[in-house]
Image 1 (cartoon, rainbow, N blue to C red):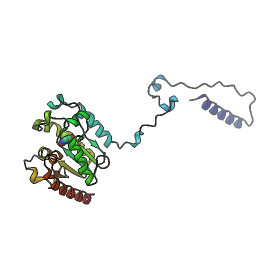
Image 2: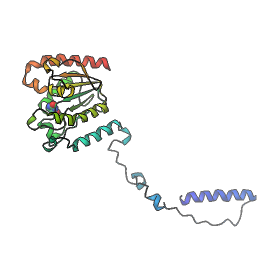
Image 3: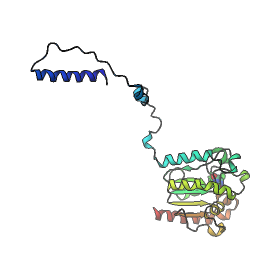
Image 4: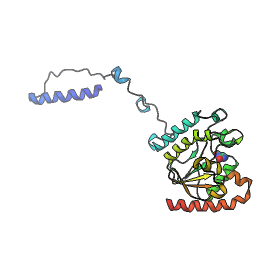
Length: 256
Ligand code: URA
């Protein structure tokens, strides 16, 4: 308690006593009030905040209450786990793990195969040539990682020389993707390429047949398309992919 608070209480008690005695006392005692200091036990629990220390608060960072926790917290914790993961041999050859990026309340999650050289270097998904084409494909149907998508991969680490993922790598890594999907709760999944489709659906159906066909993954509408790397190698895949993208967008519009 502060000396000022104690003084007020004493004044109140003295006045009450005067009233009871029916008059002012001439011999009111002189008090000396000093501030209480916190007991050591108590003090050890009091954190010095910028306000209490008189420091200026830094408001250049978003305040904590703006965070979309627990979704954002969950995604950040998961990304931290992915960066430390050593569940398969790819951890020994990766430069950076690539958890994924995008908005935290996406309409759509885009799932590719695995990071390539550019992604391994930067830690971001789909930033090389295939990624640039993917961004254009998404933009054509009003989707982007900045506004309404989250971009992820089935594997979070690059397989050396971009070889196909091995079954042990897929089973070690897919639980991370599943946890991302559960946290993000997208309205639809756009699966990019044969390898991710095979790994997630445990099918061997050829992508030439499966592309543009809806199915479910974790109970979420799932739509496979050709991989942008395949489109870069084969121009004839552009037209069917555009038809698929239009179908995909129409169904997403129906869902929301
Ligand atoms: N190819 C993928 O499947 N994923 C990436 O992130 C980049 C290229």
